[in-house]
Length: 278
Image (cartoon, rainbow, N blue to C red; front, side):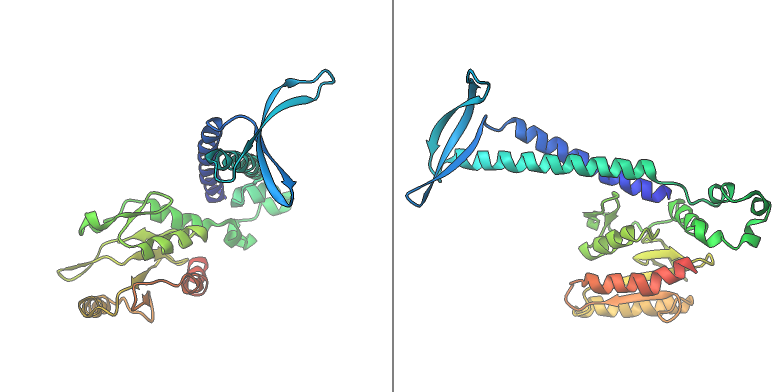
């Protein structure tokens, strides 16, 4: 549950940042608003600016006709767009803050504390409910957060930054990482493993429910002969240390340096999540 709260906090930061930008831009907008009337089947626009009130209390406007190609028309349209955007942002911020305040922990101790007393005395194993509290997933998050040896190969190539600040080599890897974030799957990026005197760094390393590591390699330029030959060599190196595609390695191939996110989501749902959850 802590990770859901972290995601909500991240969303709130994004929305608050966007709100600040919109609010600042709105403050620079011209006064008043836009009026539109039809004259002889032709729209006529005017800039209406408040100029005090009539004796009855209603607002008095000064109206100045403007043409459709007047830059002021664009500014007034942007002002209205920003005003509605801010209203929606305020609503979404309130919703997320309420959701965060209403969340309750699913930790085993919290759930057991609300059970009737005869059940509270039982051991966790006897209750057979450990899988519901996310303890395995919590252990996987802790594993991913611990220091590990990461590849230092050509760091200048890591120009793609995920929403959580992780630098990656390719846009495809970034999109995969964002999808893993969406499913709350912890991972290590380019963790170093060794095959004899060679150093390998799979794109993504995971920890399954039994505490065993497994891997995902995204090979996105298989139409390039040199790249393809290198991937075949890497595959042999992996197999030399018992990392095989049909057991503990997932390989995704693409010949056009493209990526199909439907395929990525299917891999996560069918090949990664089941291993993570046991």
